Image 1 (tube, rainbow, N blue to C red):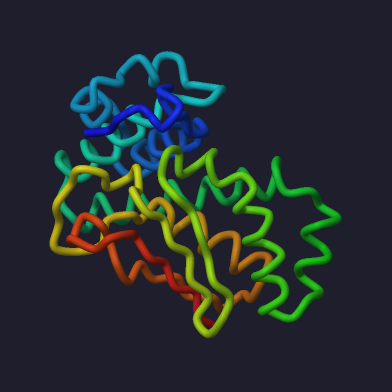
Image 2 (cartoon, rainbow, N blue to C red):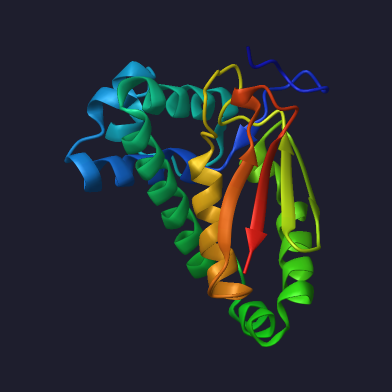
Length: 199
């Protein structure tokens, strides 16, 4: 159950976690209606959100995606939605001069610079979850109390949306051969979701 954060208010997440899932569903299946209906969020199809949304809506949508579709299809759509989110961030949120600098740096300092910037805005995608990272081989990103799989149980990692977003950012800005793997997932009983970036 998703609870209000420590201040007693509901945490919010950027609308990409809703709108890009709709785009990915429509691209793959021609419609997003059944999944959004199962999540109780059909109103977002009629009027896509342009501002921050209640993180509980994000949790509900990603849970419905996994409940309504088979595991492989849900994973592909979540991953595609993450890639689309990465494209949006590159086009609209990460300044072009910063992108040019990152591409010129060796991978380790580029990773550090990128994740430091991501960490400052982590609340926009992890909501009341806790984001942290470490720079090494591999680079690791950790999200504790992850909103994508909060309250879920699975026998495989399910946070494909984050995996896709990190993949797009790292392959574009850090190293084009970056492989991103979710090696731990709270849905499988881990204490946090852990993503590893290798090249």
